[in-house]
Length: 273
View (tube, rainbow, N blue to C red):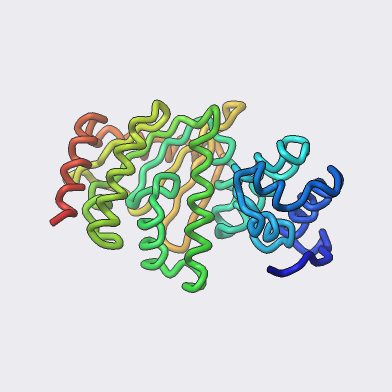
């Protein structure tokens, strides 16, 4: 196991965060070993060591536990994790990702399963298909994407209404088992009071890409559109309204919630064949 090393908090956010954790632990006394912190956060000594060395930062849930256990002010670590989460997405999507973390409502149309609703298997298959960055780092990209789903697990999560193109449910992304598990996950997510999924049937006319509308805490609105290798986020009222009309038309052509659930269950069974 690598030993402790001197960290320069200016080297990176990961190392700055690691330095914060180590300093807080040591300030509590000699009995506060990495093993003790690991026990109190339901983690492992090696995981705490990686965090303190700045090699592998915590996800938001572990960061929250560390703040409580180490008596750090709320936000000391979780705010840094938010920044790291945003830094791991492409430049054109960073503002959208920051806003998404604080949104009170998310209305989205997508021709693929949105990141907040993806399983690990589907996310990996999608990234392999699009060659998202260095292929050797896809595992890390998948982990980061799944960590961002914590936004739906907050005490007061955003209201999320998603219209999915039926084609994305039928497309064999990663194989039958991956698709079956993904669709079953979508059905399970619909059991949450804050998640609503509708399917735009094949006879409906989709747009060439995704459209996402955010409602922010103070009532501001934002719109994000994305295609392959390109995307744009705007809070310009006239632009947001234009994309709102696009979304409204797509939703009008979608199946109702109950019919959508029935169709998703039916398509999941087809992936068994």
